[in-house]
Amino acid sequence: MATVETEQPPTASVEDRVAELEAKLESMKEDSELTKGIVEQLAKIKLSGYIQGRFEWHDDSKDGVDAANKPATTTRFLVRRGRLKATYLGQYAEFMLQIDAASSGVSLKDAEATFIEPWSGWDLRFTVGQFKVPFGYELLQSSGERQMPERARVITTLFPGERDRGFRFQLKHDWLRFYAAVINGNTVNDSLYGGNDSNAMKDFAGRLGVDFDWLVIGVSGYIGEGVGTKLGDLAAMPPTTAVLTKYTKARAGLDVQAYFDVPSVGGLALKGEAIIAKDFDAKAGAATTPFGFWAAAIQSFGTDFNLFIRADYFDPNTDKASDGTFTFGGGAQYFFSPHVKLGAIYEHPISEAGASDKKDDILTLQMQAMF
Image (cartoon, rainbow, N blue to C red):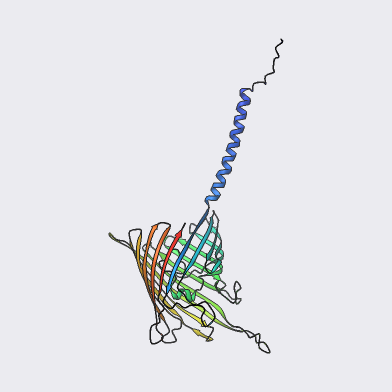
């Protein structure tokens, strides 16, 4: 029987094998460079956020609605803040977007487009978008870092929503800090005008400060023009038009923070802020001169526990007597980990008006998870 010989494929030369290996290595190198580039870009993106789950006990809790047909103050559970922030930091640009998903709904908090000037070494930044008004200390402080549940009454009254839309410039060099902004002046909580400015004039705000690590001092100013708006009655015959009253808005503030180390105990922080202003009462149709201040002390015991107290005062119009409110509050915080903390805070407001103190104390129990 004849034997059939099969033809064997030609054996690749050493040169061909080396060329094939070099091609594979080059392809792997290209894939590695592509992966490295993607990783470098992703490293510039930072996601962070926190959720504040809260139980509030109100001494003046009432069921249903109030006389204005709005939900009355009740003892309740709520999600006070649910923040999610995305930040991209490049050589010349910074992108920052923060939203809040809470019991009151979903809203835009910050939307900042920033150019970073890299040549001077002064950390110059130019921002356009929606951001916190650069004024004082507590207004700029993150709600995730503050011990008290809310900002002092003078801050929440004069700067509702804390934010506005416009252009901001900031400078940081050694111990010097400077912020300045041109903004609409409506803030972001204007129920009537929404995202529109009520007038063509723009407001100016800024803070000049020094930071020596253990001692921080800042002076702030704000000047602008507002429009008091009394809506017309469209049901009247003939319909009446809205009445506009232009007025000057001005604020001047001083803030101080001092940090000490108490041996065998922990860090002690003393903080305070005072603001005097010129404003307008739309209901009364008259100019006002608000004034307020707050002072706080925070004593840490190691890294897991702290006790704190805060006193704040706000008078909506110093031209009138006995219409201010003192609020004394304090509590404790315990950190289960760097990402979870539990707080218990009690607040006791005292109104200067009236013959007796109102029953409007508040107890807040809050757990915050952050990443």
